[in-house]
Length: 261
Length: 250
Ligand SMILES: Nc1ncnc2c1ncn2[C@@H]1O[C@H](COP(=O)(O)OP(=O)(O)OP(=O)(O)O)[C@@H](O)[C@H]1O
Ligand SMILES: [Mg+2]
Image (tube, rainbow over all chains, first blue to last red; front, side, top):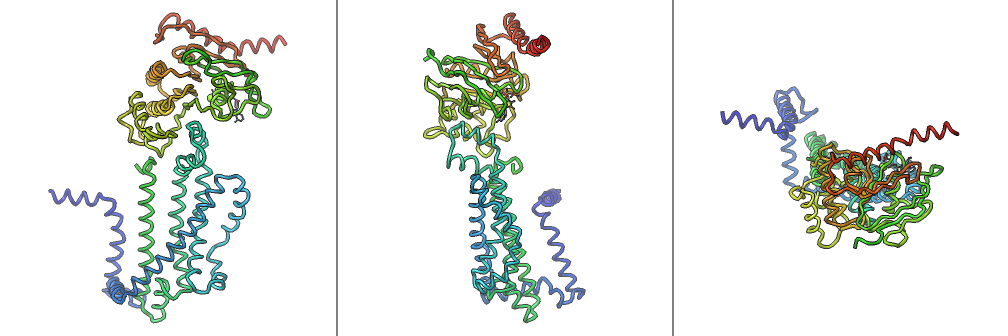
């Protein structure tokens, strides 16, 4: 009886359930490989991928590549995010800034940032700057748009109430405008985290001599299917980790929001 | 403290473009007085309050606070809005203390106690009922002891029972704390329950300025209360008839 209850509880746990489908897929994959349905040249078994990972971990290459990719992602995100955030705030608060900058930014936004790759390679070669520049550019616009929109749509009545209660200048910004715009800003951040990884994958695949993307391209040349798959899984994992992180931040910052209670 | 005027309006006019909302309003408010403003929707009650709060500038005439012409925000006034306008991202205590410095927590807590919500101080506003939100808004409006409390239909969205409770609370706090109150309401009974004086705005002018000399707390079934209330109500409703007659007579 007790066991049954415990099992029910576990199944009710949505966290557990959300991992159920990936787990089943993984097991199926392994089975198909074992039975020889999936040829090794199409998709190596999960255990083989894991072994490749372990081997690379031992030589220290894996940690190095992950570290380099994460660093590129982080720096690019930070630069693009800060620029987008500041521009969004500025244009959202000041009408002069909006008329001055918004149209130009909306125009730039329509250029797919990955279309700039040839130009970026000409500018920076395959140096770090190229990858960081592309990530920053990709991240900038979603954060800009959502910050701008968030600040623009702060309830005017609340701003008026805040003024009646003596808030102005920085205290008005800090106590009212920023928290009111935060849900929208965080949507921008989550969205741009996705763009961050996609940009990095493309950039590293095309031109790099280190990082996960380089590892994948290198492995392709030597027909190391297991390492190629490993790189793909690593990207998926990193993407998931950053999304979980963003979710945690969201939960902490938006505790007041009825949809997070 | 109770002598002298709290604030005054001299020939105050307000237009929005072509639209003249207030056309020369002369009023003075004694310190500690409770005044209610009634009138049809759109007659300019909120506009009047915003002028006193300094949120808008009159297009004609002047507002005087403590004898001095008002320039910018009226720092001795606080406004309480119909929709409460609590900041959803601030806990209830922080909402009450918004804009305060120094040892504000103590004072904010005291006011929450007075409105009966001290035990909810550390919750988010979203969990409160409409009536409780308005109590928090009232506490916030009173926390730094304003000379003037402006109330823009603060009870408009509440059910009848909660309204009566809130009216009592407002009256009690007003007697304790000695501020000048200017209450906009569309409920004539509420005006007569609370006010020393009831103003009626029509066509941009103050057309009635009636003292209510009933003992407090006022009984709604008291004969005089009923007669004054219906008197004012008739006066409010009469406009249409008078206007029609004027139109017919040329
Ligand atoms: N910022 C503004 N711009 C243009 N017109 C305005 C503005 N504010 C108010 N008005 C107009 O002034 C008139 C009076 O508005 P006000 O809000 O003072 O009415 P009210 O008496 O408070 O009405 P209610 O009882 O419905 O709240 C209305 O016709 C309104 O359209
Ligand atoms: Mg109004």
